[in-house]
Image 1 (tube, rainbow, N blue to C red):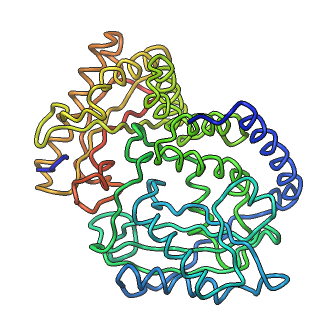
Image 2 (cartoon, rainbow, N blue to C red):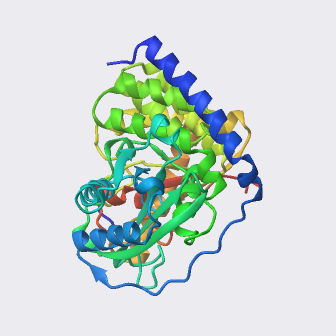
Length: 413
């Protein structure tokens, strides 16, 4: 059976928003023709590389990318790192942070013609080269399904000045070597959705080849991504007022209607103890999920139980979460398919039963909060058949495998 387990000043905030708006206008103007004409490149067929220790795999991939990239114009270039993510969940982790640190050190030592910078609106305004990367647990066929046996590492360099992908490398990493625990902002985010902004990032890494156009959807969201990167850093470092300002700014951008923004607003307001505003922010999260036809919520249960775990981080707010989900479902007159999931640990039969019981428990709680939902919810359990992580570690790194999903459906019954 599965185990469970100081604010920016007003002036500074206004300057950031004004600079961002000007930069966005310039960037969109430069890219308008290219974005309209670009076509999606097919995924590159790949032979599975050998599984290597973490440090060796990262070094090999980084060396390959920087050695194979065309020499920078003028002999020197800035390369901006858009933080690496898990290719399925979109989460940043201790492992992806470590990769970024190792790449930065390697470039400083071996490629002095490059200057590495973080992603900011200022760094993007200079049309730099950039790095994106995904670090994803995969099976023997390099697919993110079934029993995972390694991490698939994809690293890509693009050039904003030319609009092309200029270098790419892939590697496989030994499973035991990587700490895939999410960073604070992702570990504490209550809701997960297959977000379009993350899909654009992943496509720009995994579905491109050297010489192909940079995905226009990725370019369109770059400045929002820069704000979210700064906001995530501020949150992880405990600077919640600054994080809130950055998330609010990101929300106002053309690409601001995305999951990371809504999770960040809710979490920042919660940390600042602005309870009424946090409830409103969670309501926006639920609305976003219903609009996207998916709402996966991280309800943590006691091991082998259908009762919530006694985890102060989450369990104290579960009543509020359930009340808001029920209210939004009732208000929008939707039918909900409630699906329970487990990690792969334990027998399939027991996990199927446990996942169904947990879905039914959430169903009963929602109907208790809004009796009108009694004929508009359905419960199902799928055990571990739709794992997002699939490593079976049963810790903070694969908590999404023990989620409950709520999906609007067309017909009730």
